[in-house]
Length: 189
Image 1 (cartoon, rainbow, N blue to C red):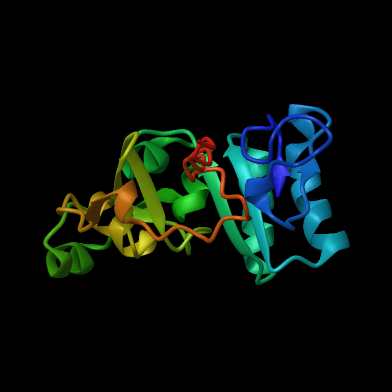
Image 2: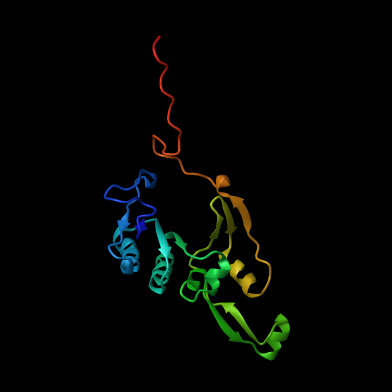
């Protein structure tokens, strides 16, 4: 877990119990997050890396490097919708990036489009995109590449809407922080 602002792993020297046995790598300065992301892959051989707040071109490039090495990547990036990520030149690589291409007359006719179009540049870094619509509401794009392609083509983007309550929750360490406290024992009579 690469945690720049201590929002997911807890603050201080002791990691939050919610991350279990995961290794937390604290980032000494925000401008070093990309280097810590790469260090996590090169030195610790993880199966999964969780990164909070991917926000710079260097961090987006590090995320792509991690994904290309076969490590499962879970991360957050600031933006209200998938469209925000696509239109953000710094973060668009996370969903495949975009570029403008000029089609020949025949190809434009075949596609029934303008000669100059915007297309996805490559494979997305993240296969799935989850939009946080509200505190308890999410929109899930199960195929990020197809969703971006449809968005750029001006077509309706297919996604699954749901609530956070419907998402599966991992088991908690005991005692579970989400569990209500046990009632006190009855008083002796």
